[in-house]
Length: 255
Image (cartoon, rainbow, N blue to C red; front, side):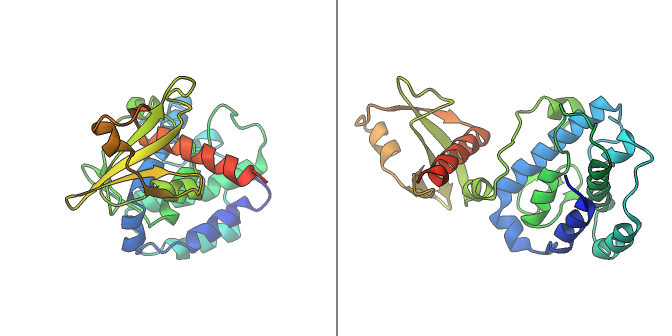
């Protein structure tokens, strides 16, 4: 980060509509992925600094450098931004993200092998507000299991944080992704991806196209009828995100 990063984080928090239930619902899929990625990153930092008992919603900057401080003017303003928010752990992470930004401005010797801990969480907040923590993490649109430090630290990374990719993962219904594979096009580099959405009893088959949109496809139906030679395998949301980001990068980079 560069100078005044803590104030930029403050302004991001100030711009969030914490009561936007519609946004939380519309972005339920991406918010769940972002929260899982935050839990993974926080678990890595917790293990590195023996802070497992404080995981998941803790002040990482305090563990790394207890002398680090948020600039006084920013610290004074953030309390007004956070007034009325709940739970307490949400406010703790907001303060921690600002303090982390200040630490990154002050030091250039932070561990390079550990990822930015708070960016996925900030993106999640920006896509529909906060969460409630009971038996599960309730993201106001989807609930996820908290898990343990070890299970989260070993989870598959979700590093595709571009807004266009996150938007492409958000859709109504139960979604299953498939990669179209053949010789020369393995699972990690498929010919394309398709998804089947089941929403309110209706089935929608869609392919992610070069127009960077999900568009209707007959591929799965024709395959089921034996009319397609190109095979497919079921893939995860994270694998789908990697393909979407790759196609997007190629498309935007072409003349």
